[in-house]
Image (cartoon, rainbow, N blue to C red; front, side, top):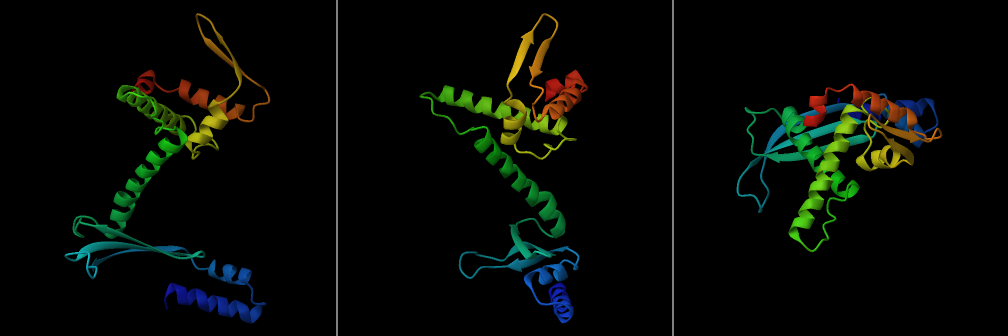
Length: 205
């Protein structure tokens, strides 16, 4: 019996005990454990492809239904298995594209409106450096906070764009934020984490 047929049988059984409803269907299908299958197949389009190509399929079943994805690849099966290709090759590539998108939308790296090439290049450098620094902050300082998976724009808004009084002396820089700041505990945690990192690691970052 396939997983989908198994879930259908459960729904029918529940309907003999309770009044049929959408909630009942969700509760019944939730009893089926989520599962993921990976497989390879040879496929050729009718006109646009000149030859067969390897297609890796991912089929995921959960209480939300069936989710099917396909990836075309030139890597042979004996070099990389279907599951490893999808999770170790394809997904990281998609994550990299998300990073580019995050830098563009949250850091405004596409704001290159000066009249000179050098000026636009400098703006792009600044945006890239800012993204690297905030990403390092997220990885090194926010890993144990509620902002560990936050986007760059959220970190800027909630953690960096704060009203504060800055006092600079010959020995230290004192940042005094409001006692009513909603994220003062996270700010303190980040400071503690960063202050404990080796100085060489901070320079490399």
